[in-house]
Amino acid sequence: LKLLLDTSVPDLVIDPARARKLLVVPSSQMQLMEGGPVIAGGQVDSIQLDTLTLSNVPVDIYPMEVVADVAAGRDIQGV
View (tube, helix red, strand yellow):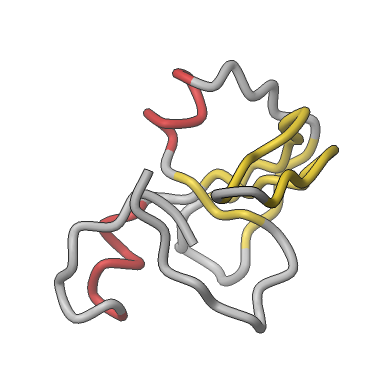
């Protein structure tokens, strides 16, 4: 999983397709701005980054093509 590390984002942000593969069950929804995409929220049991394991990680489900514009067109799968 290619992630963009953003220290100002409190949750892991992944695209809807990745969320389905990880079996993330949405438990909330919000819309940041009128006409913008709906962001679903959920949780993954754990993620591992090399030797670091994080448990009960909050996840926001958001289209990565929107984030890719900010990431200079890099192919990222989460933030």
